[in-house]
Image 1 (cartoon, rainbow, N blue to C red):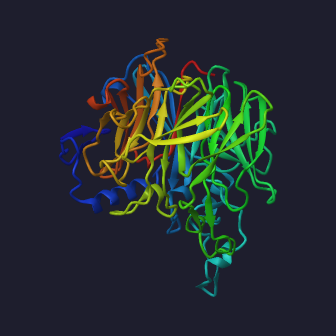
Image 2 (image 1 turned 45 degrees about the vertical axis):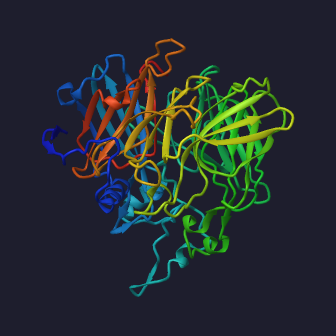
Image 3 (image 1 turned 90 degrees about the horizontal axis):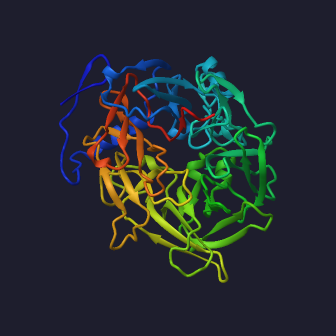
Length: 528
């Protein structure tokens, strides 16, 4: 088989067909996955990909820019980061217009990136797994803890999230966001959104858009007061003017509060706070990195679910939910699907009953460390408030997206593995039915498999056709990047959301290597 990737023809290994791919060489599969997560982006790019280079055809109605951000620089001066979370971030833009694509990529020029670019070596302690290099005396390296003890000045890698909104492009990590030019991707500097964010606000990765009110909701964790850890929510209008702010004391105090995502409905913000154990002294004194010192406490029966009213000053409610670790929420709605007449919120998420931070989604061949599974939470907010949990599928999945402009979401799109159960790299794209009960109805409606052991997919992004037909929620396209570790190339794949399994309707070759990417967002051509 051959595929035109740029000006040269790349030869592919034969694709394996079948209902379920059999991994003949799991070691090779995980070696490819590790490469996808650790091979640096070689150059910054700016070029056009013409119609003649594209396999298939981009729908003429699809216009706008797909922004993606992820870690892209993993080595300096012969020293490698120990986890992709610690890699310096790069932003990618794929501007789709008239059936062609203009691809740009640039490293985010954070303060830490510029300092290390000048020195040619890592100079900061990684927030997740990478220690600051040990100093040398008379050519002899001292123990690493000498450099890392009491050092909490972690480098802002700006590698997790990208937010195109209000004429700005913000990129985030675990601190104040950086602003970039929407067209050129040039870094403009730290942006606190007209002092909406304070120096102690650790702005987190995920955000939600309320299309009914034309608002964006972001959140931050504030640990500057060690006796009162706070979570703060900010609602901005289309001009990034602050409309509403709310601060709440976290139910679990102390340690390292890891909060990554939340769900939004018309009237509520909902967020889990999972219980963590931390070997605090080993971390503080620099003997170990954060991912070696924190552990999800899977023995606990419950964890707090924060239910925060959006439109009133009523107090936050904290409910006991079945214990879980959840990186990513899919959606939430306020529909009582049981017909009981009670005030009910339904949450859909990818939750794990246990979690191992040292390996997390990077995994390890032959062993299961994470179990993110499609899960429904039914939250009864009436008398005798309760939270019920139901696993809808045993297959591991992650990185979801959906028609986020809707209040009631029925379909989601996510990455999954090549196995029915157990951990494996994220290679396949699936479409999920959130109405399925997980018993008589299989929530996996459709699936597309890459077919080789060296190709991996990053987070899908759903783009609506804007047909205006309420029932036609899946009228649109799903965009994802394919990372080919054999040929060290990437491509933008475009699927018809109604028929994922037939494969991409267009494959856009990116002529340079793009490492595996966390998150992205689509900015329509008509959006401000």
